[in-house]
Image (tube, rainbow, N blue to C red):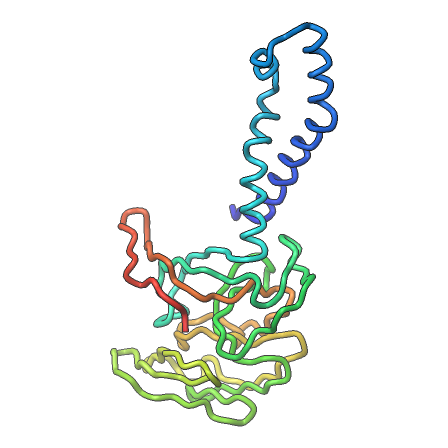
Length: 260
């Protein structure tokens, strides 16, 4: 069963915060009156505080800080698949800037403050359009108004062939360096994968984005399920801070660095 962690975090923060507030405004003054009448010591007063109030007072500040950081600044993710090879490997733990594309309300995803829009070449985390819940990560290929064409393993944007430089043969894969405006990054192509599998031409609608994985012949992306609406954007991936493939392996910090 998938757990909606942002929703759980919001509920816990609101719950502990409400209990903490009610204790300050209502319950604690009543306890003080009762204890004063009974002439209890301060130690006895502390012992009579219900455990749920003590727990809420302790956890609320921590939960609130985590909620703010995770919702508006930086959120960690782990890469579950090889669709972004060679840029991102399975098990990479990445950091995503939640502020790059504007401030959004947690859970709802509604943008309340605009900062910037996703740019061609960005590595972006978003919610899978088919269910609106699952986190996906791909590269922004097309922005609103762009005409994207993919044919014979060649990418065209607005009629212009995107530059590719052959780097190495890694049978059955071929490694290329691709240039998307100011972003240079590497991609994989599989010589054994049929050319026609993901061919087509698409006009990117307003407030939508066309996404593709860097592992071009092994990526479930916009070529198959369409565009990503702006309201499903999560943030821009900017760094790798650890790699940990499984619980049976040791964490590695050899891949720490920025994301091109």
